[in-house]
Length: 167
Image: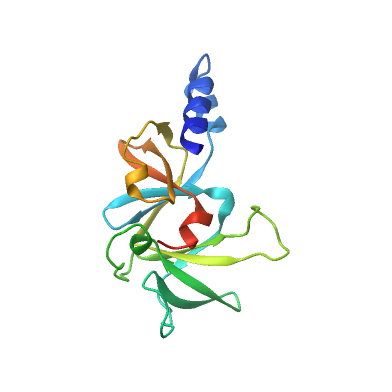
């Protein structure tokens, strides 16, 4: 599972190396807020981050699908991360963002790619959180695959493919 692999990798990197080497070796994630919690997804899966100001609702779509957004000449489905994870709908404010991700089976794959925009309350930064054990991971939904610490805050790692499948 991702949390064990990240924890093992972080421990191995820190054993005998200085902090700069450790930070360079840890996986990088885009951190963001959804509801009251902080989350992270692998930076390799993120295409771009844009303002969440032009979402068109699609009639009869599931609650977690907020609609479609025009991104670089394409209409992309918008998934509300908070709703997928069991929370309430994200309020679109000046801080809300669409994190466009590659939801294809293989990151970077261009043939048959599937772009999806994740609606989040705010984007944090590109970071390398330290993985930690978290007994609460399974209680947060099947898209949550681990937990880490970044700047003293708990960050939950998300599996993009599981997330876009919905609740």
